[in-house]
Image (cartoon, rainbow, N blue to C red):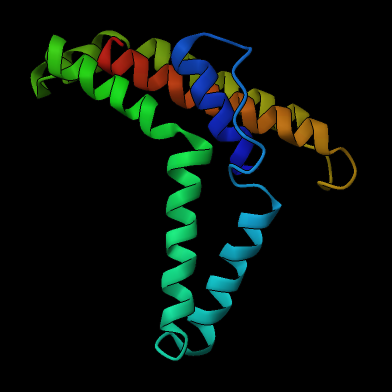
Length: 148
């Protein structure tokens, strides 16, 4: 699910529906690592600190090498650096685009209300599409606030 939300954010930020993230970006391998980390934290947080550190490194590697979202964040930061995303500007954009952002949230709520299957196993493609749409909504709101 996270993989598809992040794909939606990438696609929404660049208005490009052909963008796909690497299959390992929050893929099964890394989700398993996250579950291991959660179990280690619940059992004995300090008893497995070396393994926990290694999992954190693997998650960092996934985030920077497989997901490539640091490039998107870099583009937004560069835009803000060059164009100036001052707090007054961001607040002004939020006031000016409030209705557009509200519309995006309402559209997302309608999609989720009408399109959620009973279980993930019943229709995984529908869940993935909903997740992608949620990511695109998040990207739309960020773009409205920053004028990206």
